Image (cartoon, one colour):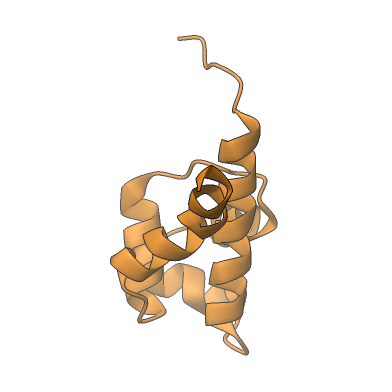
Amino acid sequence: MVRLPLTAEEVERGQRLGALLRRARGQRSMLGTALDAGVSPETLRKIESGRVATPAFSTIAAIADVLDLSLDDVWAQINQSSEQLAS
């Protein structure tokens, strides 16, 4: 299966997601957070760095749960800049 290249908007959204998760994780270790969420530390590292701009929903849901983040809030925050540009 051929994967289409990501749009600039998708890349930016992935970067905002990574920054949001890094801020929410705060002083928690990446290893502990990843293991609690059931994902590999490398997966969490790639998401936080923006290298995985479109992670699976279940992965984000698991990480958000560990970090006590509402998925509604995550969605609103990562789309905030895109929506502001459209208006």
